[in-house]
Length: 99
Image 1: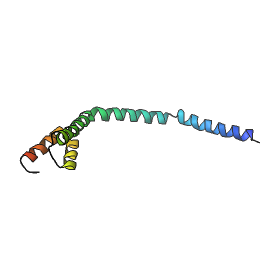
Image 2 (image 1 turned 180 degrees about the horizontal axis):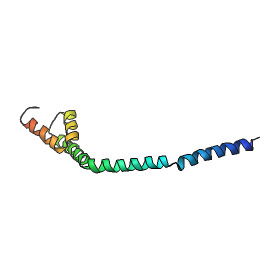
Image 3 (image 1 turned 90 degrees about the vertical axis):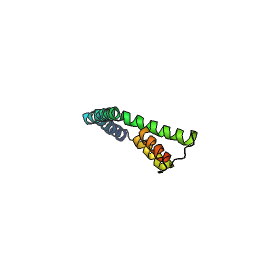
Image 4 (image 1 turned 180 degrees about the vertical axis):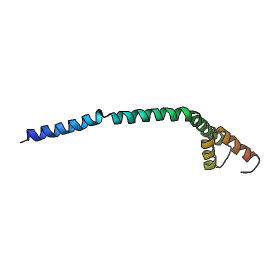
């Protein structure tokens, strides 16, 4: 048969552990710090992220739609890091035959 006292004590221990986790102010403070950090990082890096996305999108348009055959991985890396300005620099270097 099932030992009711052992089951009750096990449930009681688990409930105590859950209460310690749920109502622990350390987790609340840690969560708030993570949220604030994410907001600050996204606020300051928003323009950088947008520039990188536009640079990669511009590279894909140049490579696949216009047929400008640039070195794939190097140009993808430069356009992801420096954005559309990096892509423009690579295209100018290609125009002058330097790459």
